[in-house]
Amino acid sequence: MNFAWPWELRRAGVLNMNKRNIDYIGRYNPRKFYKRVDDKLMTKQLALANDMAVPALIGVVREQHEISEIPEMVDGLGGFVIKPAKGSGGKGILVITKVEQGRYFKPSGAEITPSDIDRHVSNILSGLFSLGGKPDVALVEGLIEFDPVFEGYSYEGVPDIRLIVFKGFPVMGMLRLSTAASDGKANLHQGAVGVGLDIATGKGLRAVQFNQPIERHPDTDHILTDIQVPHWDVLLQTAASAYEMCELGYLGTDMVLDSRRGPLLLELNARPGLSIQIANGQGILPRLKHIESLGNCRMSVDDRVSYAKQHFSTAARP
Image 1 (tube, one colour):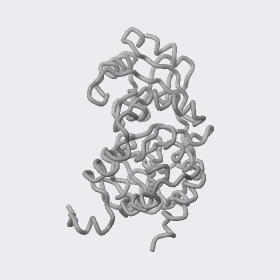
Image 2 (spheres, rainbow, N blue to C red):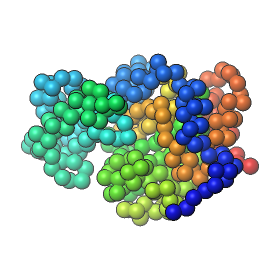
Image 3 (tube, one colour):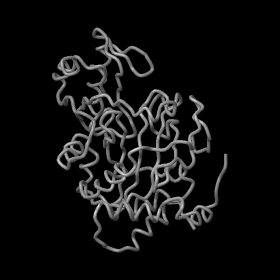
């Protein structure tokens, strides 16, 4: 195991958890607005009101007796997703990619019975996956048909793009790719691959798994730095627009690319993790301080995106 001295991390501009919580989340994220991102149903409603594309909402299960309505909700669909509105870290998300004569199949091909689905939704409602264990509601969403440009770069799951937005400026990006170790999920702590992205172009810079640099996807052997994320400007503009939508200054935006609909906003995070710095091979603190040095300047979404591309690209490094 490799360790770094604290002064080495400071010199590299690495933002640690205490500083993130106190100087950025605590200072720039008013607590009264947390619900806008902690509740995925509210986030989706806000996004739709702001003309942002999101995964289709098929239905909402709020009470135990409504669980029996799920087969009717998903009738005729090839697949669907069930997720807790107040879950975090990918917990409680159930993806069904194939429905055949009343039988349900997960991305791995494993069959899940209707009783399993009922039990899963019942657990969501009781708060098993929610922040603080509070009672929750279950969202039933349409399946995302991921962009074929990512074919071979992800194992079973849908790749997602995480962008950190500070005061409306997209400052750092990462593509998260599921693996066999992460059980098809895109969470880095569960073994997914993180690919740092150039903020100006969306081109892959370097990749890590379990905090260690890697060159190829562990399951598909594809070279990870060859990735070029399409629709990059739309992704940047959507992320920057989320600042006005939720009124949180320090924010993580998670988006996916649907082959038919293009970029979709998946969810927002008021406490985005710090591993994006490892994926990018550099600390985020200099970029945050740069934005702070601008003061309370008023810029449009397009101007903020242009500014970020100009100042935070790989080519702009000294």
